[in-house]
Amino acid sequence: MLNSVAAGRRLALRATAFQLGAVLLVAMAFLLWGKSQALAAAVGGLAMVAGGWFAARLAFGAGITGAGTAMVRLLAGMVIKWITVVVVLLLGIGVWKLPPLALLAGTLTGMAAQALAMARLR
Image 1: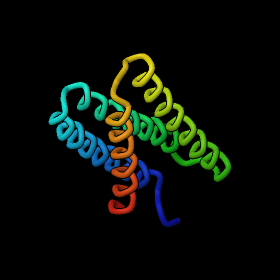
Image 2: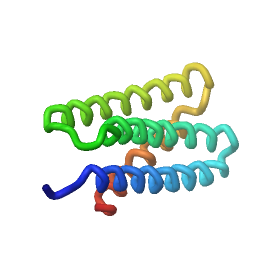
Image 3: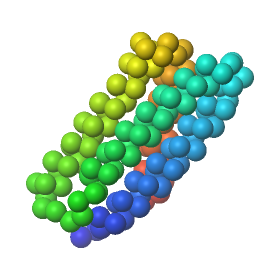
């Protein structure tokens, strides 16, 4: 066995922290264009952070399980993550009337930060 459940859980938490830092930096940069732009970037990025956190909790929350159960939990976590992101984006654009470009920029920042964190923190 190359990797334990505890190591996966730690990696997911570190990736979430890295992702949160990157999203906050981008949101602060969007303050140059106004508070609504910064709020939109923060909401978009936090959608990715929350989705990743939900996925990690679902995937690694049960401890050691069989291969089939572990795969189902990973896939269910991914589905929950993307449902969370899509719902927050729809709420941000449709209900809260946030600027869509800043919302998308925050989401992409969260996605890129997660990919970088998972690649670098192994």
